[in-house]
Length: 488
Image (cartoon, rainbow, N blue to C red; front, side, top):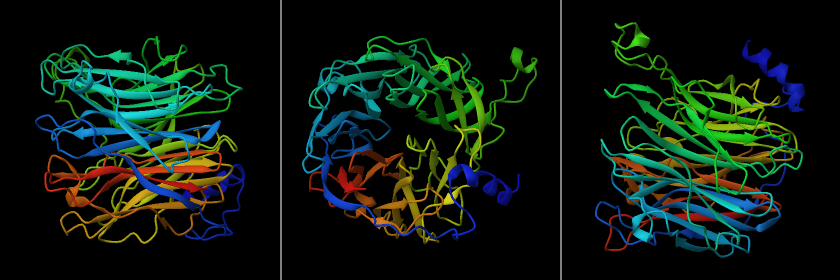
């Protein structure tokens, strides 16, 4: 369908008249008001060898829908040079972000009484009864042949002040044939859903054969109906030979699951294998453009069907000197609209932020709308996230400038649409500048993290993001998690 036809076909479902406003205009409405701005998390664990001392990175945040002043944020605590962290740090607020209380979470890594060497990819969510869930990917060793990864889920009954021992949702075998990555957790909170209270744990399941041939990385899911104590068998949202990453699941009011993710294509069977007829080409990805797709389950995660392409050419890899830029997704329960925000691949050396919208549960998606403004050479975007309610859409991201000056600086910004994501107003700068030369590293690349974090409850909008600034004399790094609370 041509771009114009596709947009007009979806206009009625979105509830807007697309011809009235140009692409860069927005309905006039007051912007969110900043209520609080301050430190949320800093490294609390001692730094073992190999850790980039004084670093916190990769945040997530969730707010209690019944008590909007209660929120929990989590992040890596002390990042290792070659990936993951010495532990996970969780912070809680009970006064809407006026004050945050952070501490390393016990029982996960060996640094604090756990059994794993490293941890990463924290994800936080609240259930309908106020129980908070913290999902973590924990690993032992980083080299073959003894790589082990476990998907762990902890619970809190007191708003994040204390956490249960970890429950194991999934554990890979001690080999190089499987490895889990990019965990994400959601909870069904809809009273109309037959799965009210169900906890869904997603991750990417990278697979290889005994010869080390890559077989695919499908999106895997398990669920729990007893507060993370026991878990279902594994289901897959995509076929096992697809190379995918980055689940961003959404749950409709009736309990349907829609998972958005990057799909880099089908992996060819290994040469000489039975699947290749004994004489195939070497394993390869036949489409590496980073297209975004959506799959759907209508039976509580048991079976899935791939619905549609969300958008083409999303950029999951960042820029040569910068590791960043996973996409984000959310559902507006008031309207039923699904939103996927992502970095677009390649306009010069920029990385603009775009938004795609689905009005029908993931079957059709609008042509992406550009959210960021002023994109030009030397201006790049990092750490996108999106939340939405009652037709208002809030997209946050960092704007990087002066990249040639030792990495440059990043200003966190917020763009708002008051017309269901059709148009966005000028960005609002929130929080202090971040100086990338003091940030953690991923190899030789600056690492502001693969994603940012937002949560919306009642009259509170929480934005949490990495902030790097002048370090103490004892460390070349200084990267913390900063939080801004706004009245939306």
